Picture 1 (cartoon, rainbow, N blue to C red):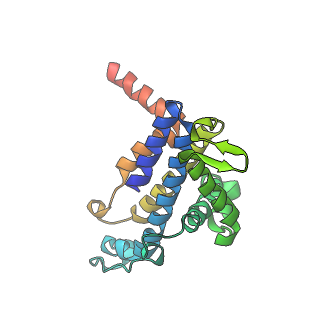
Picture 2: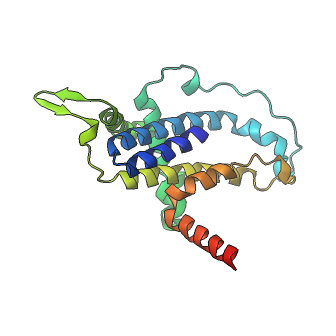
Length: 211
């Protein structure tokens, strides 16, 4: 997940320097990295949880983790990774809203996100390469800012959703020292997922420091 967060940070930096095309491409790459992290997490979650001794179970060392199919090849199709990422992201509204909670628990199947994944991959290519379509020439330098800020924020909130899931998995451990904290990633992504909340925290912290 650290690389996913770093890509979001880089995308935000590019967007702030009038390079929305490159920012758009990096956001799509961040979603691909998220998919790889989700594949690994699904395969490893049981063994990673074993040392925590949750819910009265005896703590034991984590066993070996079988490399998931999605990571068994170095050249998985981009669209496959993006389908996984978009499926996970589709639960975002339900994760944050009680009224829509079932959207978080009951996501559509992967095939539902095939068209979206294809478009995301095209967006990534458009952000990197000069291309020709018939008589038209397209360039990353011609991509308008449009909704890039929203895309960055959405991707960052999807990352936060994963990080919160992981923290929730571990939070009831009898021995808190065994928790594998990702607090550094929470703080790193917060300026992009929740900029207002982060700004308020910084302002409050600064005010407290001045007193």
